[in-house]
Amino acid sequence: MKLKTSLFSRRKFLNGLLAGGLGSLAASVLFPLLRSVIPPYKEPDEVRLPGADYDGMEPGEVRSFAWDIKPAFLKKNGDGSLTAFVGVCTHLDCNVTYLAAEKKFFCACHDGWYDDEGRNVAGPPPAPLRRLTVAVEGTEIVVRKESPA
Image 1 (cartoon, helix red, strand yellow):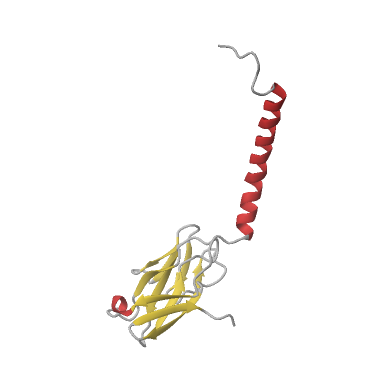
Image 2 (cartoon, one colour):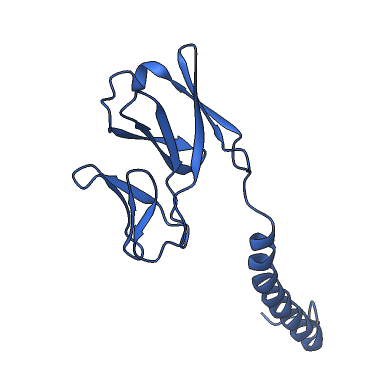
């Protein structure tokens, strides 16, 4: 069935198509720019961990925990103190893993290596892993951002 009159003219259709295409192009350019300027989340100021989960740690042992959406690691030192690191490579923000057999942190993205103290020892990472402050408060382990020096 053919309509006697069109709902919209050919000119309006082409103008709408052009406007939609230009709008899509603008959105595809602006969205990544805005996303890189405005961070998608705010990193937490502190994370509280149940102390019972970490009581049986041996000196030199490393366990992972969540630092918001990023991985983090808690290491028990020889003197019984605890050290924490954010498990994100300082090269290109890839996640790192701890290899217990090697006693090193490894970034698989570009073959970056950190020793068990978080110092960069091989590969492209330009700086050590970011440290976090650890305090034991009652039955909880409180991990906080390290204050800027």
